[in-house]
Length: 494
Image 1 (cartoon, one colour):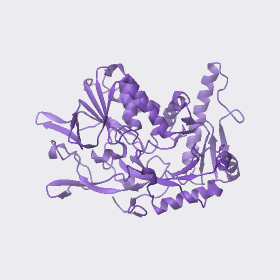
Image 2: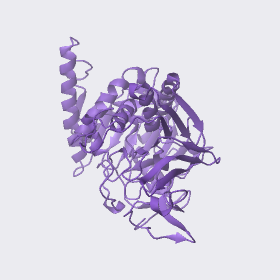
Image 3: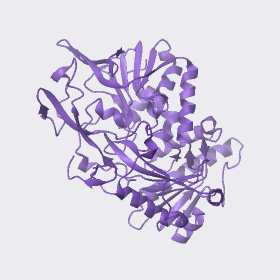
């Protein structure tokens, strides 16, 4: 065990058993890193998920996800570049990764993210070229005047880069070192890596609630989880990595929230697929809209990286039920603090609305449908009037600034949280598990000032969602609420 970053705190003991809740990108990556780490060679590891793998409504299970180092934040850009090296290797083998390029665009007055991202990827490309040259490999992967990054200074430049007959935005750049991954195939690959270690026990059941234990002489402790089947799973350490379902198991109001994002899939012909084959992924930072080249099954996927739709539901307070009672409640949780029905405290949180059987057939709000079609009318004019073959809501776990939430719980011993992917966590799957384990071990390099352990730590305050800015890459308006399967409304306050 490494030294604690806090001199007054003793090193944490290595747990003899670990329970991971959730088999998404964070949960599986954590399981894989733990199974390979020598400090945990005697630790029993169990991973439980509510659905047989792969969960069809999980945010990690889909036809495609953007793989990019194109971030306005230099720290995320560097971490994404580290992950990309894995995507270019075994992680992206067998057609899982497609480095077709990423076109980032924006309208005047909204270019800040694009400008900062361009600065960061240029710096990263310079480092990469220097490394390749030092190793005797010349200047590495490069196309077009010796660089993978091409500024786009006009709509005509963007149209030429898109290869679809359309255009979007007024300026931007094309990064030929970015691309997309087959998300479901990549998750199956990761699941196979975990299984091959023979260190992880997999269990399918829904977690009904966390188990709490407290006494006058000891802090409240999480001792495992109660399953819907009635079984209890106990562990020295419980890792909550349940994605958008995390706020139903822990009071995360003002810290993390589930939001549904609109996605549409449009079938194209073989001729159209061939015509669009040279198209890069397109991400418009003015609207938050993005679109992928055709997948192997002839589908063009278009989506809205927005502030999303909430599905507010009243639930029993997840920390007040069971053994812990009121003593297990974290103070200062904000609105809904005193709500009760009879003797049981009630809170309102956004809960994913999905269909386990056919999640890809889920209707999306009308505003989402209209926005997706309008975007395609610009980027792919020939597809503008075509109906979607299917639609779905992808459930993000947003945080106020778009940072992940990867930390020990400040109140409950035995509980570690690994969630808050904020719509951009998937691409880090090759490296995030190792970062999570470093934080579990309180490694000094991640826990010092400016390290990921600090940045992804438990926030000092809970922030009303009206003040959430996310990371500056979202489009659309705030406060959207699902009202029915086909409509939506805007709420002043959740």
